[in-house]
Image 1 (cartoon, one colour):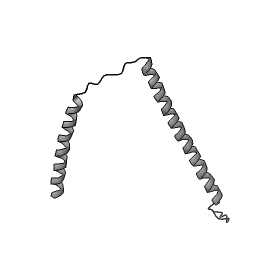
Image 2 (cartoon, rainbow, N blue to C red):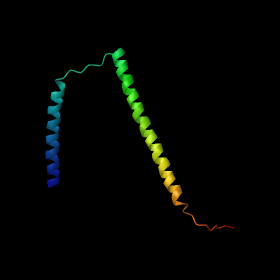
Image 3 (cartoon, rainbow, N blue to C red):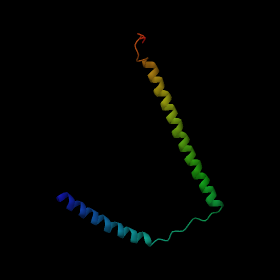
Image 4 (spheres, rainbow, N blue to C red):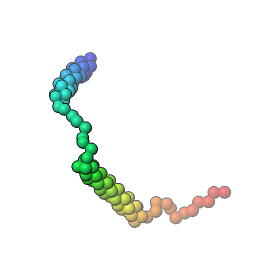
Length: 87
């Protein structure tokens, strides 16, 4: 019973906090960005940064897989030398 009451109190406080933050946010004026050459340059720079980060992550992942595959090859095969034949 105490858990339910505590949860209700926390939810009520969070609701009022959210309403206060929403009222503060409504005081600001937001506008769409102007589509011009400066915006295009900024967008291209952002896309280049994203491509560099994705390429670096992809390269590190490939390096990790290659190193992991190399460490498995050094440990040797896990199968026995005996070959079983089924009729």
